[in-house]
Image (cartoon, rainbow, N blue to C red):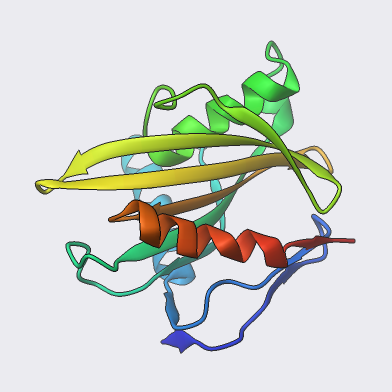
Length: 166
């Protein structure tokens, strides 16, 4: 079901975010997929899915884009500094061992982020992705965006401007 002007709020982590309009909410399906994979591998080491949305089922469409907000305990990477922990989670969210370029620091709404960029070939199509990762209340939080073109990626990541912390 498309979301028009819907806002996501997480009081536990203290933030509010407005995703792009006209995206379909797939959060419950994504959570179920994570549970199934964890059960199949007998793993308890999983990412937390807060929000999962996409523009439509046709992932080959030129204007296709998607976003997720995922979490992981900061204490899970005790040997890494905060920057390295954020970079590691960003890569894990995207299914990579590391980003295509060195992650860069950014500050948004007074919160420090590490921003990572990824590219991958999928079904003969080049997908681009950007992950904004921060630490809130002892939890790594990754805002991950994917698209089939740099223009669509820029459009979907513009929604980060709506992010507010409280």
